[in-house]
Image (cartoon, rainbow, N blue to C red; front, side, top):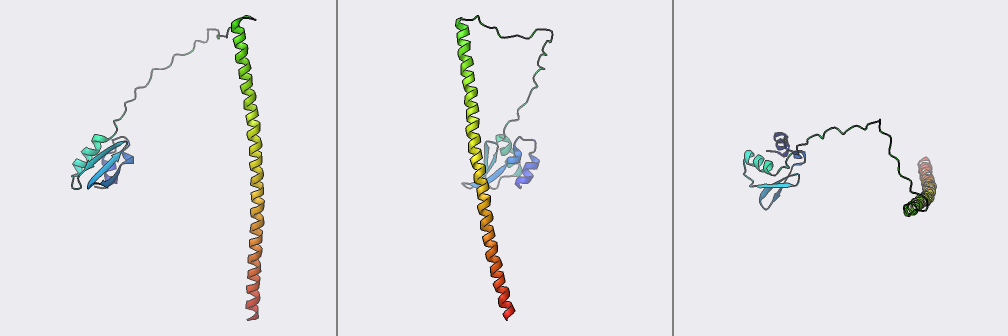
Length: 157
């Protein structure tokens, strides 16, 4: 039985579309998913199907989750408490705010550095196009000259 026939007959198995077979140590080794089944070369179709079925990944039954509760719009939105000025909590909040501002500045600096590098790459792109165009022009001119020489020779014959 061919691999395609097996795939059709075992279409109910997960990952059967990835079924492969190879010869190894005088045995036919079928693989599907992470499983491997070995059968002797003279095995019947039923034996092959049974071997593949026994190593095929088990289908996962998915149970839908219950619907998420809805937000009650009548409740006021929670706001972060503002610690009293000069308190320990206020000093910690100031430290966190300063660190976050530093991160934002680092991101801006990083974008500027990467932007400059990309600008350099774009310059290389333009230079590459210019050099390639110049080379193509020289090759075309050489080809035109060769064709002209051939035309001159054929006119002289």
